[in-house]
Image (cartoon, rainbow, N blue to C red; front, side, top):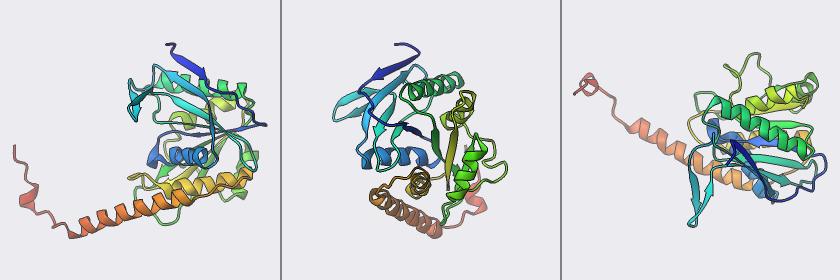
Length: 250
């Protein structure tokens, strides 16, 4: 297998599609959002991208295996057509991140993409009730558009910048003159966060003019709220540690 290998699974019959990326990251916000789009809009798998920079493993479902890869689905909506990029892994090294992102952009260019949205989460370090969406873009025009949709721009936030494929889609996209933006939902960073994924998707559908049902995400959010409630109850009922408890015994 080549270092980066593209498998054409089906043809994408779309009109001026926008690339939407959601790979694993903080709170799995982007991955949840991307997978929800594919599931709710009956997306069609059109490309698989394999790489020796992905983990050396296969997934197993009903006894059948699939080599680690990223997938691109064609998604037709009542507004903007989409190519949705998702998967279970990111690259394991810097060269892999750059190589995979360039490969994703090559495929996007081949399929007629002229605009990119990366989806992800930004950690707050604490449980939150209101889920703001923070943005970063490669053009002032996009920044104005996102602000009109309720996206916040907070100086140098997120601290440390945007890492992984989401960040490189902006950096490498700009070098190709492809407008790109990143939508980041606030999340505690401790748990998978369907509410943050919904907040990001609500902004995206406002910008691109499509509608998606959020029922299944809301159900998952209720399940996570129950998990959080149980954790909080356990923390409140746990006895306080004493100096005797904290001694190291080796």
